[in-house]
Image 1: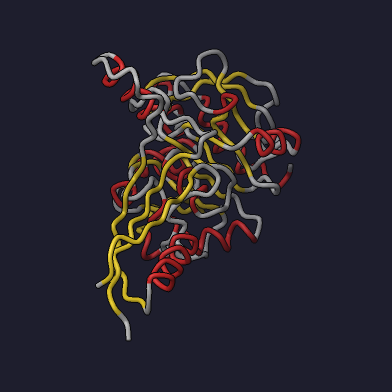
Image 2: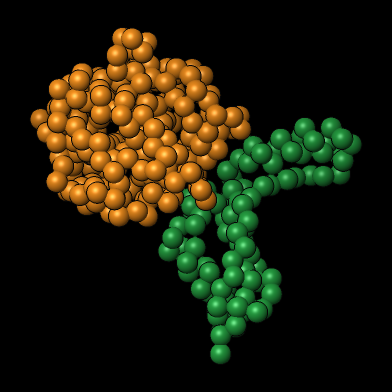
Length: 221
Length: 88
């Protein structure tokens, strides 16, 4: 499986993600500059960070880049597409996932480990995890307050498109504790937590590995 | 004949989306400083756009079409307020 990790100006944890995929999971992962990204990959990860300086709104400028056109094509082909943090913001702004990510209710950048519950395993990034599992991953963002109106949130809940929620504390004021959602096919997932920062015992947790391992099992799910 | 128009757009959270910055400004600055008559503050982002157009209606239409096309605001959470400030 060939996996692209797309690097925009202002990306972060891009190399961390490549390291996890290559060294921990022994996968063929390539860090690729956004202008050089093409579709000859089996899966793609949009990493965290502050692409294009978060100007206008986090993710909006990257959402219009040619790289995102390629992501759109891969998504339509059913290939696994993961947006982490700023990558999630890009997928939202590209219209590949519904809703909006607003500034945290605390008006602060929140960087901490969080307790999460997996709400569905019908996605390319949770299929190796039992539904209802409690996992831990860190967040690090300023605009992660997921928002949609109540009718839309009900629709997402009923369609099983909510992938993860906070358990207990909701540090950003996000609607119904939502931190990750998917498209109808389950192949496109956006999440505010950073699985690559929870993929090595030295970092304090390994639950993030299951997110990437799910991608490998997706074809058999 | 085209002229240049100044069009201002303000992007703000819809009423149903909380605006914590506005809430902090009214609570911790205005009310604490005695301006109790202030009932609500909503913040937003202002873009001041100069655009060539035939007339005010055309200028407005062009800017609104662009905002929708480029998703300058996210219609799920934001409302867009457009006003023409001046011609040429």
